[in-house]
Length: 283
Image (cartoon, rainbow, N blue to C red; front, top):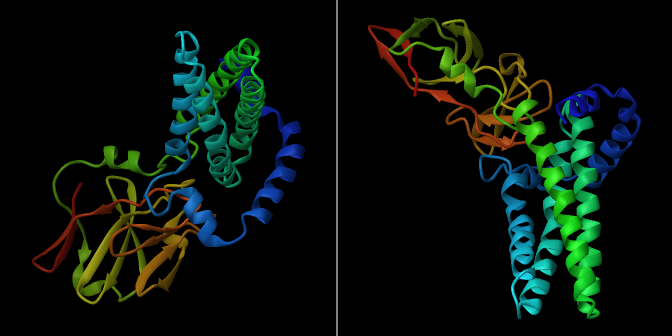
């Protein structure tokens, strides 16, 4: 399986299908507020992993009930719940997928294909159960569970091996030593401009607004874009930095994500001014 998924990562021929699907997804989910909701911006982390708990939980519960006597009605209900809830979970997944890198999108296609097969099996299982053919319904459900289990395995590869929709910048905290680090004279910091500094070879951005200074990790949590090269925009009364790569937007006074495709907040470092020198440390 590892070798197969590596081949899928490198299968540039899948880009023909992936690029077309990406254009469709981007054109369909056009309003920014819809994209942000599906990315999980209001939560501060991706929505899709949370949403898949409903169909997966319902389907596994239905599989258990299928082996228990007198539970046909309950198993049918759970199959229906899982099938219905899989649709919005898939929409959230497609929204995340459209903002990934090409090699991630290739594996994402395999993930979506396996889950689509599983959903088709479960929809057929539900139809069979409703028509009274419970034996066929159980068999189709077992096939569906196998397909979505394969989809889950591929999804794990996508998230944990390829880093899709996980915070790409947070690991840099582990490269910083403990204690306070000097970042320069407070008096020399310009107002409302992005300044880039380093703490133990980790790039951070400084932003001064009055007497308040934000120190934030510089690499975007979405795909490691350089926030230090981004633009500052005022959104809902807050100064925000916009990633120059994919447009993820974060509040400079707290790090909260305002617009996706990032579903993760950006890490802010605690600061102090000592003898006129700005210092920062690990959270």
